[in-house]
Amino acid sequence: MPLLFLIALFGAPYLEFLVFAEVANEIGGFSAIMLTLVTAIIGIYIIRQEGLQVLHNLKNTVQRGESPVTEIIHGFFLVVAGFFFLLPGFITDSVAAMLAIAPIRGMLGNMLVRVGKKKRSSSSKSKYSEGIIIDGEFEEMGETPPFNKFLDTESEETDLKN
Image 1 (cartoon, rainbow, N blue to C red):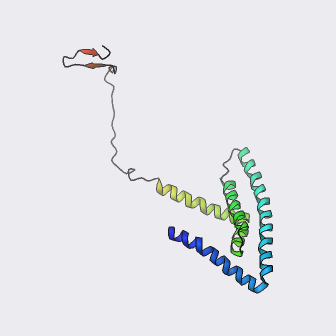
Image 2: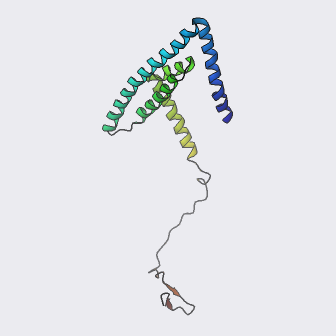
Image 3: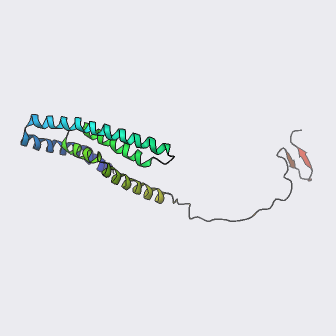
C-alpha cells in the first residue's frame, strides 16, 4: 500500500506534465495555460452550483427525518472535484469533470457504500466470536452479607468497623 501511494504521488504529476507538454506542443504554450485556467474557472462555477444543490437536498432530507448518506457522499465527491479543478493539468480536470456529473457521483457512491459494508461485515467477526460459550443458570441462596462484615473461623459475624 505505501508503494502504491508513492507511485501515485510521483506518477500523477509526471503524467500531468507529459500531457500538458503534449497539449502545449499541439496548440501552443500560452493556449494550453489559458485552457487550464478557463477549465479551472468553469469547473469551480459548476462545483459551486452543484454544491448548492447538494446542500438544498441535504436540508430537505434531514427535515424529512431521513438519513442524508447520499447527500454527504455527493458533497464529498464535489469537494474532491473542486480540489482537482484547482490543480493545474488536463488529467485532474478530466477527473474533476467526471465527478461533477451527478450520475457518476451516484455510481461511485454506491460502490463506496458496498465496499464499506463488505469491510464492516468482514471485520465484525473477531477471533473470539467463535470461542467456547458457557451457558448456565443461577439461583439466589438467600440474603447476601454486607461488605463490611465477614465470618470468622467460629462462624460468628464480626463487624469490620470495630
